[in-house]
Amino acid sequence: MSAAELNAGLLDAFSDALWLEDGLSRNTLESYRSDLEQFGAWLTKHRHQDNGLITATHSDLLAFIAYKFSARVKASTTCRELSSLKRFYRFLLREGKIQVDPSLNIDAPKLPRSLPASLTEADIEGLLNAPDIHVPLGLRDRAMLEVLYASGLRVSELVSLDSAQISLNMGIIRVMGKGGKERLTPLGEEALEWVSRYVTGVRRILLGESSSNALFITSRGSAMTRQAFWYLIKRYARQAGIAKPLSPHTLRHAFATHLLNHGADLRVVQLLLGHADISTTQIYTHVARERLKRLHALHHPRG
Image 1 (cartoon, helix red, strand yellow):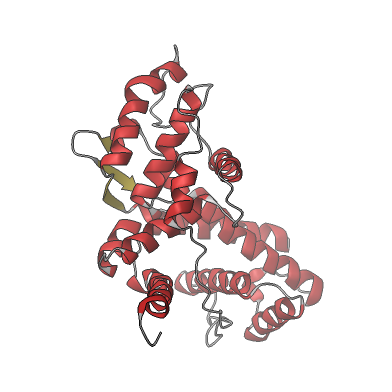
Image 2 (tube, rainbow, N blue to C red):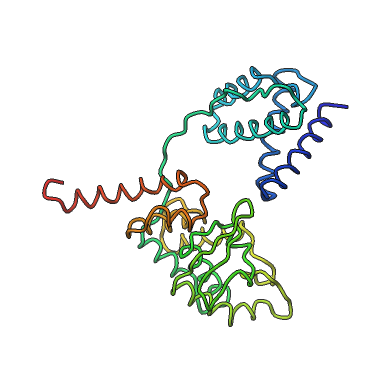
């Protein structure tokens, strides 16, 4: 059996295990597989190993990380790839495919503590007002933007919403997050009003004679994609005169930052964002802290 065939078989088994254990999405599984395939290709080219991933040693992994560093690959990318390798070799050890885990005692590169990009409340107001609500697609887009900002959903969670996941009477969304974990997220009066206008009028127009379970649909009656929504946000940002780098995830950051700025508890924000670990949420305290520093400098007599 060739190295490529052996690797493919191991990666198939690994992907199946990840899906069964964690319920990971197809995109996440493909990301794991891509990282491991890159390492396998590097082993063949630079270490001249033809026996596949299963024969990699501790020194091979260290050399791979050093290669990434010399190629000026982002530390965040290398960290993700190392995480994929560690998970893969733990799986092989558990399954009895290897006797020693080659990824043991390899630390990930230190990552700079960067603040997530965010928008001011004025930026958000301009972005939300950018769609032309007098046309069906514009009203749909306004509803999507309002939901994203009001709930802090990931864009993948937003575009995959089914009509059954939203309760207009209760004003909540039932979200299926990462790993198949479910959470309930409130919408707020403003977003609820826009979604109601969309659902009771525009959505029926867009569907025509078609049928779909998707909450937010295109002019063809099909579900919205992440890529299409990313393009829409870019377009509306230009219309609103927002020059900052912006993506659908930026609204998620704005949601968390603005909640904290207005006094929300960090653990509440953690629940709303669907973070499994509060350490993931804590970076937003740095964003809020910067605002407090500016207010102190502006208003304190010795600021």
